[in-house]
Amino acid sequence: MRVAVIGASGRMGKFLITAVQAAEGVSLGAAILKPGSSLIGADAGEIAGVGKLGVAAVANLADCVNDFDVLIDFTTPALTLENAAFCAKHQKAIVVGTTGLSDDEKASLNQTAMDSPVVFAPNMSVGVNLTLKLLATAAEILGDDYDVEIVEAHHRHKVDSPSGTALRMGEVVAEALGRDLKECAVYGREGQTGARTQKEIGFETIRAGDVVGEHTVWFATEGERIEITHKASSRMTFAKGAVRAASWLEGKAAGMYDMQDVLDLK
Image 1 (spheres, one colour):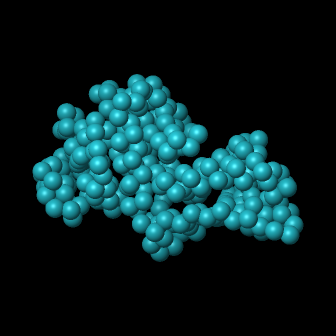
Image 2 (cartoon, helix red, strand yellow):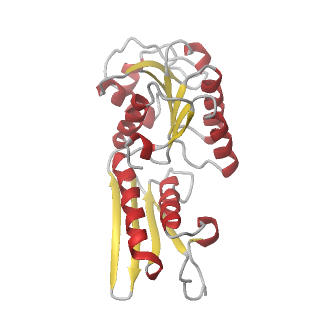
């Protein structure tokens, strides 16, 4: 599989190029930068710090449409939808790690998946996706007797809150408990809020320093508390997961997939 990386000069883009270079069964086919970037034409491997790869960075997808089979996109919701539409039009697969998509934007991405294969997950980490499986199991066993709270921490530059991963954790727990997260979620507490209700799922957010990503889900009742935690110490874990998803997409039919599909956890 020939992989294209968009945002190749950014923090995540460099990790993705490095992960593609290190993985078996995939190769870097294209690297895309912002139009007007001074690095356009530079070797993508040198941009990422892994040495020359013979792939010159370009300004847009149209300039490399014949050079890749799957695009990895960790950009912004609006740009991701544009890129997904481009991939669908040209029969390319896409791996989407972008967070902060609205319900309407997710619906648009699902529409795109009718014409081309899409892997969409708020977190590409193998460990996080295993954690989601553990959370579903814990919620099913513990039931409504345990209060659920989700605490997440990220670096100061993250623009969406709560994180897409925290929201997905909430969705998984809510589904296992037979609840609708939109109806039972509580985002932060301040003032005289009164006692928590039995079925609410609380979210607490921390933004500080250079925290890559930490998520802890509490299941608490009278006498005991269970905590399920995942901590990421490097963005490389997300990059490796995304590259694994890109490789998995080879030969897949059009449709919407997630990392649970990639890891055969369903």
